[in-house]
Length: 94
Image (cartoon, rainbow, N blue to C red):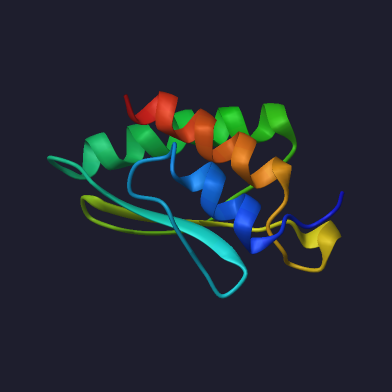
C-alpha cells in the first residue's frame, strides 16, 4: 500500500469533518454524553476495523475517544486504508 501525498490527504479530509493531518497520521477527537456511549462507539468501530483488517490507535477517558490512523505496512504513513476507515468511523459516529 502506497502512502498518499499531503495534498491528497488534505483533499480527502475536506470531506471528513473534524479530521486533521499531522505527524504522518489522520486524527479526530470525539466526545459523547457518557462512558457508555463512548464505549459503544468504540465497540462498533472495532467491528468495522476488524472487517477492514485495519485497526486504529485510540485513547479513551470517560466520554472522550481520540482516534489516530496510519498504515504500519506503509512505514506509518497515511494510505487509502486510513481514509477508508475514517469514512467508516464517521458513519458509525452518525
